Length: 132
Image (cartoon, rainbow, N blue to C red; front, side, top):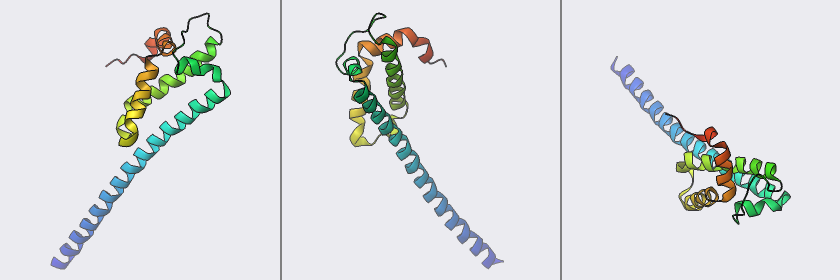
């Protein structure tokens, strides 16, 4: 009976080590996938700005926006994407590599203080209110 208990204990310890390794590996995989989503979103912003360079001034140069602005629907659609991306960065910032975190957080801060972002949020703030 003692040999059976020893074997069971050894098997249990090996299983525990394997589970710990798998958990660490899973955590790293999840972190990597979340960050890759940030990168994909960044590339999507780049793609849109290449195809529609006139949108750049609303995100990077702070041009004013109102209901009479040319291409307002397109600007608001682009801002919706920007809002979604900034929310993801804020919610999942712990998954951003340390060397890149400052840049991502600066991007979020900067775009949240553009007239286009603020205009979008003023029009749709109820969509983004957090109720607890």
